[in-house]
Amino acid sequence: MVPGVITVVALRGRAVSTTAPTAGQVLKWNGVSNIWEPSSSLNYNAGPGITIFGSTISHTSHIGDITGITAITVTGLQGKKSFYKCSKYWRGFKWNGSAWEACY
Image (tube, rainbow, N blue to C red):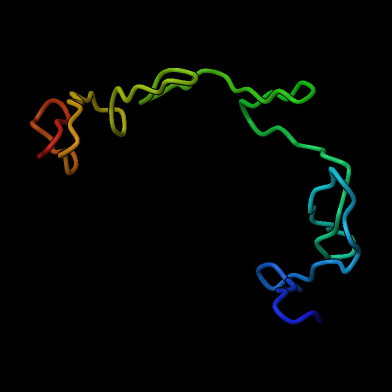
């Protein structure tokens, strides 16, 4: 150990490899040897609604109580219509009998 230098030996209780990384490598979990280690490989698995093409990750438009792809608009809560009034002071929503309203 070098005085004044912090050495990380684990992340969330999982060992970190003592192998020094080279330029451009990332720290990646190796599930076979159960250790965090340097890697040049960046493989991603797309979940539902996600598309990965090269280094571009995108997703399909949201459905249900929200709409939009990058700019999200809340249109309801649990299938009930929402009257959302934007304010920096709002504290939540209240049900008015037919729609959710911002509560201040």
